[in-house]
Amino acid sequence: MAVSVRDVAAAAGVSVGTVSNVMNQPDKVAAATVTRVQAVIAELGFVRNDAARQLRAGRSRSIGLVVPDAGNPFFADVARGAEARADEDLLAVLLGNSDENPAREDNYLDLFREQRVNGVLITPSSEDVDKLVRVQAAGTPVVLVDHEVPGSAFCSVSVDDVEGGLLAARHLLAIGRRRLAFVGGPAEIAQVANRLQGARRAVDEVPGASLEVIRMPALTVLHGREAGEQIAARTAGERPDGIFAANDLLAVGLLQALTMLRTVRVPEDIALVGYDDIDFATATVVPLTSVRQPAQLIGRTAVELLLRSISDPGGDYERRVRFRPELVVRQSTTG
Image 1: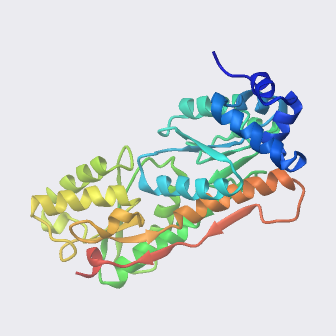
Image 2: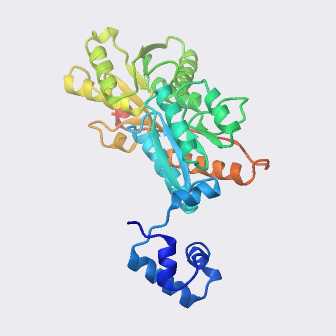
Image 3: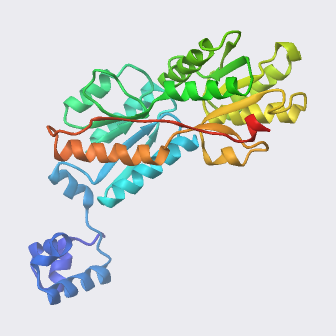
């Protein structure tokens, strides 16, 4: 049978209120009493019912985080940054993986609201944010992560992906590549569309340069490998001489296919650029040039915006933070 607060109070010879103060406001209780009550708590193995306390307070000590792919190291680093910042305020981060599925995303939003989280950090699976509008209107603050909706009331933390695409394609063009390919995922993913937009802008600046778009169903290593096999099967004259992958997972798959088949050399025949600069980018058989996003800083900043929106909802502070990406050059483009 579970030990109750009343059991602790009886064993320690104090009131229930005193036990509550020892757990929540020990500075209001005599030191000797605190020591005695804590000893009884340890002896009886008492664990307080935090759910009941949260219900009375109206909020839990948690934040909800919904990402589209928890297996992607970029989002794992975002979560790590969010956890580090939340921990500074003794808050926990509850992670939900939507798998780019709007129904799963809605389920997590409903669950987090039922858990009375302090707020929700989310990378939405689509541009339809009506559900998020309703969540925020109902009193649960929402911060968009790696995404923004111009003209909306949402706080957001993002990276300039158009500039990131521009950096990647300009680098390939600067090393003499002219037949570029963009290997990306569904066009509905805003980050993919923005990176492609930047790449197109760079190609338009160079006469004689071209950009082929290769769409894959998802931004995974397996789909990158599939794209690489398709490219390697072409004749040398039909292949691109430079590839910009929409993320590092695709780039890793491309690199695996091209090097394992041994029909194409990287970077001699095809130079390759990824996006995100995940840790594994430095450990591939040919270290990967990539566009870096400050993933952990994105997570930290999202939590800071959330806490600010809770403590000072009408305050004068920047509600949309956009970081600039950085090109990190390695052997997949320099040999």
